[in-house]
Length: 103
Image (cartoon, rainbow, N blue to C red; front, side, top):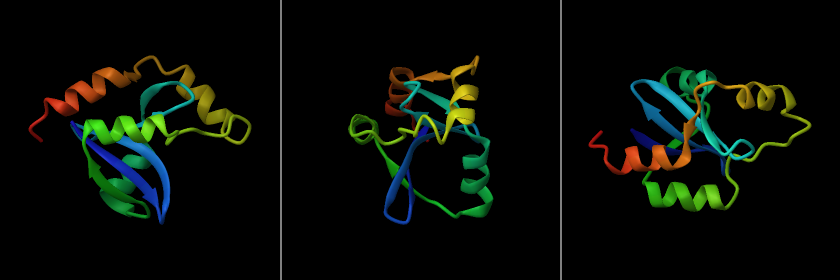
C-alpha cells in the first residue's frame, strides 16, 4: 500500500492510500479511509491534482493537522455515503499496511 498527499495547487486536499489499483481517501469526518473512485480516475488518467508520496509518519501528521476534513453542510451527500460505507479502512490498519509495504 502506498500513501500520498493529494494537493490542488498548494491546497492540501487528501491523505490517500493506493492498494491494488483502488484509491482510498482519508475522510477526517468519519475517521476512516474510503474508496474514492473519482480520486482513482484522477490519479490514473486526468491528473488535475498532484500526488506526493509520503510515509506513515507524515500521513499521521497531516491527518492530525486536519487534512481530509470536509465541510458538513457543503459535503452532506458525500459524507452520508461515506458514513454508510460498509467497507471503510481503519486509519491504524492503513498506516500499518503502508509501513510494511514494499510497493
